[in-house]
Length: 515
Image 1 (cartoon, helix red, strand yellow):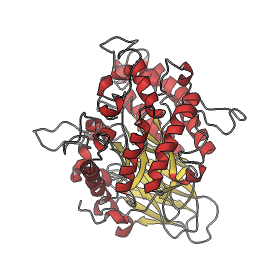
Image 2 (spheres, helix red, strand yellow):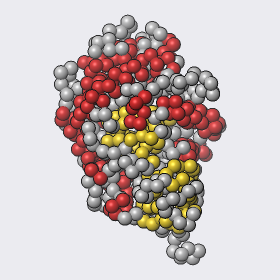
Image 3 (cartoon, one colour):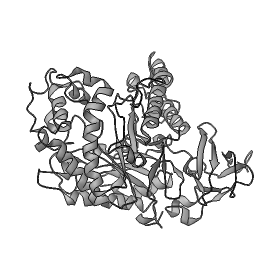
Image 4 (cartoon, helix red, strand yellow):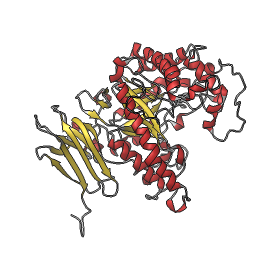
């Protein structure tokens, strides 16, 4: 699996309407994972903490590339970047860059996520925001008022008044917290400027509404988005653009800020999230991506097998797939139509498979989410890759992928589409894949990933019109030698009009009934 590419071989990505596009004008689709969970820590960077665990291993990255994954959500921890008010850790930025450059050798993009959960160790979590920033907030009541310890789970900490005040002080720059946040991102942007392997900068993971006990209306996503999040995002984006005017900025709503799609005529020029422009203004729509998470709150933990799921799990799944899920995806579509930006699902997986039973509800739920993402040509990164690998067998030993779980995510898809996408689908039961698109005049091919894990005996490819030619991509179209044999390149003659289709089916194993 030796890599043949260099980091400079990756095309710089921008956005074009609701899609990502490359320098050749092709629509780009990204599939990948988070490697953030194990990077959560406290204190300052010591040379080994705050870093992705699995993706720091080049052999893991090479294998993921071979399976067709082409993007990873990487930690870019504020507390590690900025250990004090007057210090930027160039060592941390360089350590992250070492990993992103290693991934780029295998054709894998990165985007940098400033991750936080309940802000800091002051509120019972890890240090997302630096303690020196959070400690400037003087709570009206001691943490965790009005709650009591121990909390039932970490997320309940958001309902503490002190946590909300901490966010509010940062958003409003009460004690210089927003300036510090902007300075941290400016330092990161300066460090990564011009690096085509960096897909984007995700400003803040799962931002909270703010001081909801002072102003309960902030619980309304449109209010918090308009009054708190977007002004803060504008300030941080301005600092980034002083150093890097090209890289995509990814921005999140409240975690519950994308489940309220609006009807035609409602809330004109403003999305349900409260955003009426991209961070930095509408001029940056072609360098912006709305980042959202999909977790179905009704059914956390329904990943057990059907036989032991209990009487309510099927109903919970129905609520997710027939009610909640479509609301989320429809709201996202309306948001990006309003803003003119692309979108990316940077987290999902609350009901991930946790057993090898392919008929479990967890597998079915992942299949539904991925099929819905495919239907909308939606890029995604699953939370979190650590759950898909076993523990190291010995201290310092290599971790083994749990293929029985990873199989849900290894699927064919068009990573580059030379034209306008119209429809696509994949059937888990038959491994039949289809893509329909209207070809453009670019000479660059449409590239379809066909993982050998799905097609161990090869594929049969049919096209319409028959002038659409598909063949294994030459080495210079693949990012690594390992992926070349699993990458299909399709080219339409100049002047082709109408919809072109590609259909892929698996060949059968040799032997009786086979080839």
